[in-house]
Image (cartoon, rainbow, N blue to C red):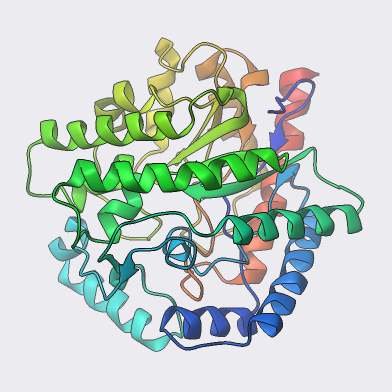
Length: 388
């Protein structure tokens, strides 16, 4: 994993705007409609090339395929694993039900768009096994080709894959006799995808919003101790799936949900960190730009980050159409470097993705790219101050 040796490197959390035609195809496929696979792959191939060019134009150092080949950051596994069918009925985030006006606003927005709903994913109705080795190899090969065609513009590239915990939480269990058994089965299946990404030469990013968000979702009405037991179980499952993988090739993304809600029921970082930090990861991508969690950067000033690990703080909020001023970005990066004590252990990132499921995004595409440009501009300013 590249580190910020003489300047602050930039990255993002994974999902980026998809072309409208691709979004429509993903939504149709998610809804169970058959699509022409060859035409579908051709649209994806074009979208990947476009999203790489956009990242390069914005000045991103460590990029990816924007998750263009996927309908969302986790429900796509239904096409790569056996055992899924029907429909889940995911609990609504507790902070949304607390404010009826916001819930009504979000419902209207969801119904108005042609999108993939993460609240109605398929559920596990049979044994979950990984059948999508060809699909992940195709995705990685496609990214390799697109990068080569663009002149390999990134310092390095990453490919994301979900935590077993977010699948278990959002794709409900109607087959296994217990949640731990379900999580174990998903982790065993995901281990094949994790390895394929690494074997293709990419950094693996594990998307694990469950390690924070499920406190006010699946565990909203339960004691904190029960949620921490869930986090502990998921981290152990991830670590088993990463057996013998050097932690320097893995980064973990944790957030409290990529939506512009009140978030006033979010679990504090300090209450979950002792379990989260046990993940075998060399870098941690954390939401730290939004108004609810920006202050938690101070938590790391007491040496909480594992020795040698890289912090990828969100310095761009992915739920607002404000374009951050580069000086604001630089200030956040400098504060992160001060908290960690070494600018070489900081990579500037985003709080989350910009289109975590196809068609569902609160930031419009052209503003997304402007925000990523502000990220790279701010990193240049911070680099001059931190490295001279």
